[in-house]
Length: 63
Image (cartoon, rainbow, N blue to C red; front, side, top):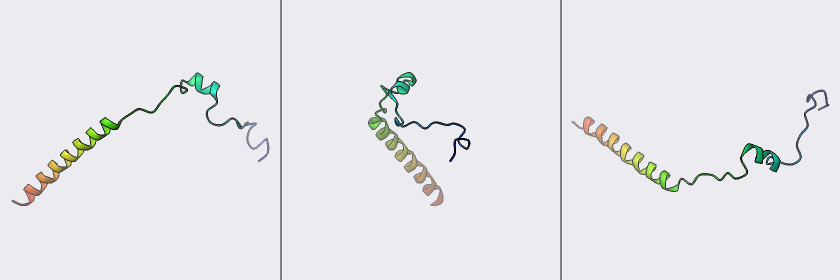
């Protein structure tokens, strides 16, 4: 690829997380959210809802 083909684009050799850029963007202090409790509760609610739907459908079909 020549210089004309890439429109003078310069590739970074510093990696994806340049400290100066992440500090400006606000990513430097970011941690992923902890969802262990919420995820478990969501799964329980979904399982109960699906059981009710399947149970209701089976009761209608068995009449």
